[in-house]
Length: 238
Image (cartoon, rainbow, N blue to C red):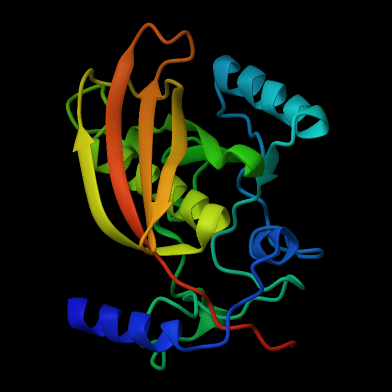
């Protein structure tokens, strides 16, 4: 599997670059038109802290250059059409799967019931190459009784890292991922994740994440990661 991933990476590295302008990069996350449900919108399960902080960042999108990233259960093309169950750079064989039957979906959007799994929204600041993720873990993500499973936190951090890495510098593949756990996180509480790209060097993006409560009195996991920088093949119009 690892060898297969690097074979895909090598092949993509020789392709003509997907447009690196800000507009073309964001078209992967901001389709002009789609009928798909944006799961990064508030629902009845969101706690008051998550609702109010979400509103604060929405205000920042109007004046401070922040951008809210929509989140769908699958990958969409810029025109909103569903292009298949897996992204073109994943290297997975989907010949035996039927996209129409919804066989695949993003892991952090795999739980259907509102409030039971991954409730989150990501905001990105292009000029500063940083993101903030507001994450509310539901009871299906329980580890120790009453508290969030560490693996679900790692998955949420990796999801935010991957989006930030791609938008900040076409980072596509996780090379390393080191997490340091601190305090336990109660189920259904708000976790604020601050993600930054510290440097881009030798086709690698070095990133960090600090997770904390809204009032920053409780420190949660911290994370360091490295992503491989690649250029995507330009998508053909549908």
